[in-house]
Image (cartoon, rainbow, N blue to C red; front, side, top):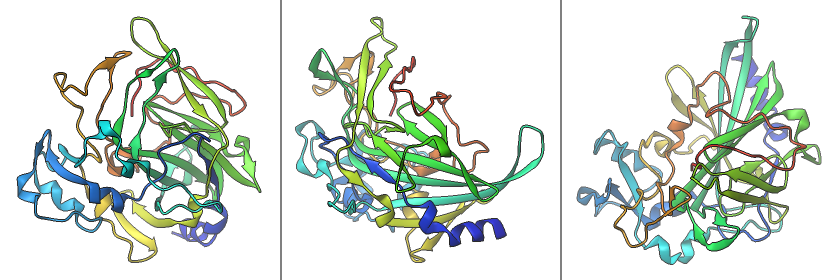
Length: 331
């Protein structure tokens, strides 16, 4: 375990990076603990009556795994009608110093893998998770009243892969796809990587600008994700740091040492289930429902995978101003 111990001693250097939210962002980073104050567990689309009198916290949310399909069809459903956009959805805007009340869980996974030549290589993946109370899906440029992909709860993530103790690649999640860059190619601020979050969607990019997606509807509708230097968020100011055993898939708190792990064990959905077609709030735009499922939890991010790449990420140089993804939109 020497490689990991050496890495952890240098945490201040590797954990320091900044994330720019859009200047017009309305839905800011949020604390998962606060989220639980505004939701109740549903089994699919029906309230889980057995839990109505129990208060959910980050220390006990995994108890919901005993219901339904081992928790997989349990939805943490908003007590309020999301279509009214209650104020709690807006989260907490980071301070002028970049600190947010939203805790960012960081999970280190160390293992030995085979490289392209079949040689053993020691790697450490640093997963960082960014939670928001709400995801505002894209509004159509020609008609902003039309939108799709809104959902309660939003979970984005980035990965920095270290090889032989040095940062090598950066993975950025965005919708149903992702991008991967060399660590050296990412923009830097005071020597540390800079990320950009799309307006409302919070999809992660290595550059600012308008990122174009071609939808898989009959019209091949073009929609945009907007990323720009607005509010600066410095996640390193409020972290929970963990290590994950890739064999047992068990999580151990590092700092603070008493940080809870129940939220990681929960196998359900952090948000509402997609509303039925006959729900008056529901419609289909660009082939996608206006209101969709909230995000699955961190166990579904395949923490122990051999490559930081999933869902056919586009190989996008950070210098390119636009990304065209010809695939369905996803959360």
